[in-house]
Length: 293
Length: 172
Image (cartoon, rainbow over all chains, first blue to last red):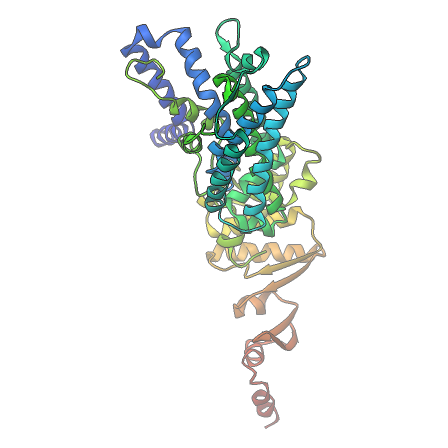
C-alpha cells in the first residue's frame, strides 16, 4: 500500500513536475512581492512579453521531438519581420496590404523552413549544421531586403496587432499565442502527423522500416517551425512598429530553452506542447521586483 | 521483423500502444486525426493475443523485457495483416519462457495459414520449428532439407560444406 502510494506520487511528479514548479514560483513571487507582482497589469505584461518567444518555441518543440534542432529561428524572424514591414508600410487601400503583409511574412518563414527541411531530410545534413547555416543566410537576406536600416511607419491597424487588447487586459499577442498553441497541440497530440513526429524522434531507423515517409514528415516539421516564426515575426514587427534587420538575435536560443525547460529531450521522442507553454512562461525574465524588465 | 530490436525495431522512448499500432496507423484511422478509441482497441487486442506482460499500454516500451518487446513487435506486424512473415532471429536475447511463447505464437500463425520465413542461427530452434530448412553459407544456398530428413548433423554439414564427407561415410 505504502509503495503503491509512493509510486503514484513519483509518477505524478514525473508528469506534472514542471506545472507544480511553475505554480510554486508564482506563489513564492506573490508572497515576496505582493504589491508589484500580484496585479492584472503585471500578468498582462508577462503574457505579452512571452508570446513572441512562445510562438517560436512551439515550432522548435516539433523540431526537438524529431531529435533535431533549429538555430535559425531568430534570423528567420528577422526576414519575416522585414517582409511584413515592407508590405505594411506601403500605401494602403482599405486594409488589403495588412493581409498581404501577414501572409507574406508567414510565407517567408515557411520558405526558410522548407529549405531547412529539404537540406536536413534529403541532404542528410545534421540539423545543427543546416540551421546554423540558415541562421547566417537569413540574417544576410534580412540585411539586403531592408538595406541595413529599420523600415517603419505602418498603418494604425497593423500596429494594433501588437499593442491592442480585448477588455483592457487580454492583449492580442496572447490570443495569437493561444491559438497557435491550440493548433500545435492538435497537430502534435491529436493527429497522425504528431504520432509520426514522435515515432521519428523515438527511433528513426524503426520509423523507416515501419513504412513511414520519414523525409516528408521531417521536412514538414521544419516548414511548420518556419510558419510559427512567421507568425512570431508579425507580432514582433507590430509591437516594435518597425521592421529591424538585426532583430531576434538570441531568440532562437531562448525558444530552444523554452522547449527544453518544458520537458522536451534533445535525444528525441519526448516533449509536450503543454510543457512547452509552461517553459515559455518560466523562461520569461523573472526579476527581483516581479516586474518585467 | 528485424534481428536488431534496439536499432531498428522498438521506439524505445515511446509507449507500448504506439509501438504496436505505428505501422498500421493509416489503416486504423482514416483522415487526419487519431481515433483514440480505435487505436486503444486494436492495441488491446494485440496485447491479449500476444500475451504481452505490461502494467498498462501507456507504459514506455523501454521498461519491458526483451521477450515482451519482441511480442509487441510481432503484434505490430500482425496488425498490418500480412500473408507472409519474415522474422529475423526471433528469440535473440530473450529468456527461455518467452522463447517458447514466441515459438508457440509462430506455430499458431502457421496454423492460420500464414507463411513464415524464419531466419535464425540457433540450431535447435531451426530444427524444432521448421517444415523446410534452407541452409546458407557465405551468401550462397548450399542445401534444402525437409523437416523429416533433417538432423542437426546434416544441417551443420551443409552449413560447413562438408556434405561429401557425410555421403562417403554413408556409403562405407
